[in-house]
Length: 227
View (cartoon, rainbow, N blue to C red):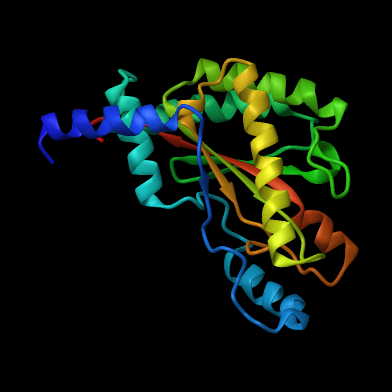
């Protein structure tokens, strides 16, 4: 795409992204047999449970990158990407140590797994007070390392209807994103994903497995030069 077209598209996208958006990666799986969701969840979990990372898709990330570049945020290139993420990963591990948040590196992306026992009460979408200092430290790091796109993804267990779980995961992701925004993290950087129960990392037929599936994940994607 020519540079002029990139700038025009970036400007248009930027104008629509300031309030964030919701991306649905696979809206509430379409299997009509809702009684088979435990089995279905186990199959999905086996396929994707070991993989941390982006759910919103390459197209959504590319649009977000174009908007940021168009808004004047510089991108990273070559070996600078890995070095930048190395430094950000170290900062996150230091500042989030002992918080209950897992920091996972996959290639150039960094994913933070935030289980609901430290973020939200059961079946609620308001932050637990004790988690706010953790998000404060996270916001400080995100503001320091601002050459990243931030995907905020909400996940649930399989208890309840697909629609309800989708809505709950969206509300939780929005709550986290709104809190970070209030701490100075640009909404323009954030991509909000409502995954509902469609991306389990454990079986849903045990309480421990369901607790692991109820989570918010934040994935940090480096902003690449020339996007």
